[in-house]
Length: 305
Image (cartoon, rainbow, N blue to C red):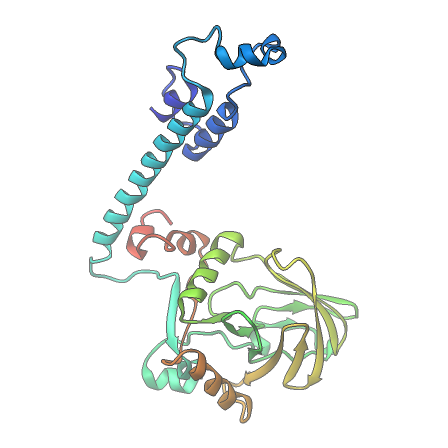
C-alpha cells in the first residue's frame, strides 16, 4: 500500500525496503515546479495563475511527498510499536537469555572478588595467553588499563586479543570491541554511546596501532568519527600518555591482582562519577544481538539473531 501510494502505480510489491520508498518518494516529488512546461517559466504571471496547467485534478508533488512521509511514519511507527509490545511481553517469560550488555560492580573486575561473589568475570584481562605480541617488541600491555582523563564515560580497556610481530615499525591489531574488553560507566550517556557503537562498528573491527619503537606509536580508532590518529607515548611501565585526551594507567596486572597505586585511585574516581560504582561492558560478540537490544528485549531478539 505504501509503495502504491508513493509511486502512484498499482504495484503492491514490498520488495524495496520500507524507508527507501519514503526517501525515493520525497526525492522525486519534492519540487512543485519540476513538472512545469519550459514556457511557463518564461511567463511568471501565467505560472502564478495556472501553475499546474495540463495537470488539473492532480495533487502537487510537495503535497504528495508530505502525504507519503506521513504514511511512511505511521506504518513504520505502527510496526515498531507492535514489535515493542510483543518484545515487552516476551521479556516477562522465564529462562536464560543472551544479553548484549552486562552491568557489574567495579570490585568484580578482580578475579578473586568475582569468584567469591559467584559471578562471571565481566572483563577479559590481557595476558600472554590471549595476546600474540612478539616479545622482541618489548611492549607490555597486559592487564586492564584506566583511561584517566577521558572526556567520555569510557573508563577501562583491555588489550586482550592484540597481535603484533617484530620488527619495527610494527602494526598491532586489537579486537577491543569484543565482549569484556571495554568498560563504560553505567549511565544514560554511556548507554547511548554504546548503542551508537553497536550500529557504527562491528565486533571484529580492529583498532590498529602502528608502533615505531617500544615507547611510541600511533593509534587508529575503531570508529572514523574521531577523524585522526592518536599518539601514544610510554611514561613508565604502568602509564602511557595517549595524547591529547588521557593517560592510560594499569589498574590490574596480568595475574589479576590490583595495582597498589592506580586501582584505589580508579575506584575513588569512579565513586565521584558513579555513586554506585557500577560499570557496563558488552556481554556478547553477536552484532545482531547488540543492535536489536537497543530497542527490544533480549528474548525477542533471540528469535532473529
